[in-house]
Length: 123
Length: 132
Image 1 (cartoon, one colour):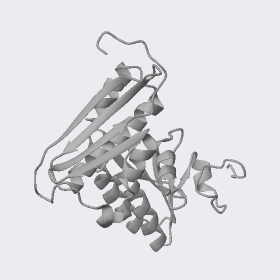
Image 2 (cartoon, chains in turn purple, orange):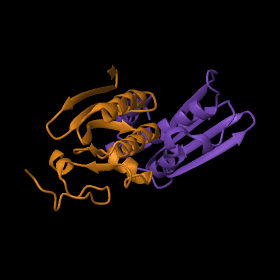
Image 3 (cartoon, helix red, strand yellow):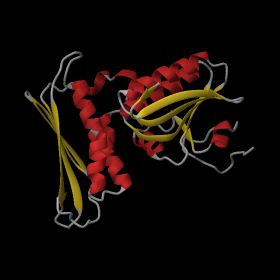
């Protein structure tokens, strides 16, 4: 998933540092889904949808939505004193919104906008 | 041991034992790194355990946790644990964001790692480090 996301961002002219931030944030979100949404041994599904948008100022921004369909557990029992993935997510993005419902959790992230890039035909 | 995106090997120098990791440290590959670091820290007679992470291109929170517990395990065994970062910035930046840069000490060059001076506040400070 990271590799595909990196290539996708690279194709759209995302600079290396901003690319690394996005990939880390998305990886943390997906890891959170995998670890917290489903008990050990259970299988579940999660989806990652990423869309590049143009802001009103004409800058490029990535909007990513990670959705799971399990139950969100609090981070109080993380093993090995693992730093909160949420802190890394927030540091690497412009905004993170988490919506928890009985049906599952959705993490919506917006990357920090980057300078405008020429819109390729496949934008 | 290797994964498609991750390799880890070990070499022994006169001053230190060096665990060399390349590629990406995510939740899965961090288990490979952890077992190699644990074994090295517990079994080596060297006083200094170095993680050569100059070729690490990605680290997530799971990887940071392995670094933290390696630092703690080394302390329990009265050994120093240092992370050699070279030019890559992913590990120093992630440690800084997570507030762990005082717990996991990083250095940019091997001479700095070998320096016997008291470590500064966990960030890289070439000034004052002796060079052989």
